[in-house]
Amino acid sequence: MIHFLKKLLLFGYLQALNCLFPVTIFGAMALTHYVHVPGIARYDLILLICLVMQVVMVATKLETWDELKVICLFHIIGLALEVYKVKMGSWTYPGEGWSRVFDVPLYSGFMYASVASYICQAWRRFNLEMVGWPKMAYAVAISTAIYLNFFTHHYLWDFRWVLMAGLILVFWRTYVHFTLGGAVYKMPLTLAFVLIGFFIWIAENIMTFFGAWAYPDQEKQWTLVHVSKISSWLLLVVISIIIVAQLKRVKSAR
Image 1 (tube, rainbow, N blue to C red):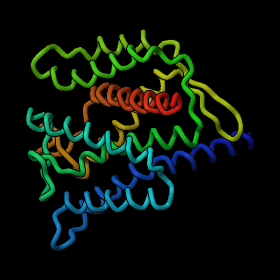
Image 2 (cartoon, rainbow, N blue to C red):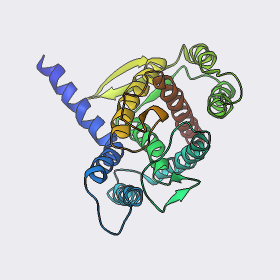
Image 3 (cartoon, rainbow, N blue to C red):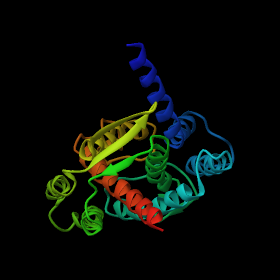
């Protein structure tokens, strides 16, 4: 039991380090929800906090330059998706701020970047290894289809459940091995997709409560985000992990 508790504490400590950037965003949301700083709009202040935290993490070597490059890529991918979704009326940003692109505050890209930050740091600290990884063509094809579905489902049928079935077929033999306290453990990658998507859904409820953004049914009064959103976050996590895994495989080959 003592050995188990030590491993659990170590796991929690490492996860806390991995979550530094997401926690910073949560803190910024909560702080700016209750505290108004004269002379700077809320969304601009959140963006400033995110930028400062990004500089601090690189300067203190909590984040490597390679990880920063991946995070910047996710910032661009996420911001493009946000612009489209806001235009289609999926959600809105009711707060004030000058740092906007087509009614989308620039800080929103950091929410997607924080997912990439967590994955990159967890990969390094837990020494992740993907065993049974599918062919590159399959991984790229499924991630591309998932990303496109976020855009096309407004006009065509929503293929998310078909894509999830495809995920099981593509990754059914893939396991993620992670090291904790000198011991190596493993779990199905598809289970990791579900777990991370679930916890992001919990985080989404916290952020919408603090007014980070609002779904149509939350504009007058906050309500719990529908559980169907877990599937959306799960699919987003799939894209994130595939991109990070493929970049690491390319770097390793070089």
